View (cartoon, one colour):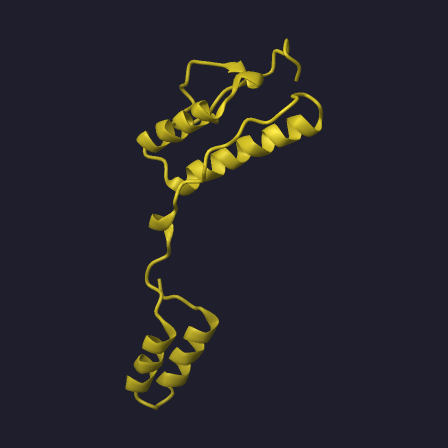
Length: 125
């Protein structure tokens, strides 16, 4: 993409919270503050941090490919990824706690079965 290019950046895919954005701009004008504002906008619309990081990753990849293809001369700096601490899976048990749990089970085959489930990562739904 050259200085006079008509290629544009339009945030969001159809159906996404940002799909109703009314602006389009040449990709050459994209800067880190704009990308940070997109992060904030997506967060305000209720997007999960993991989804926002995925969208930013797609934009980053698009810019890398455009740069590699010679369509743009440089990539804008991208903001830091958002923390995904809220996405940490819950319900897992520490190995020491699991061993104590197994010790408390009767030795009538149930203990072996539960040990197998724990060792293979099976989860009850």
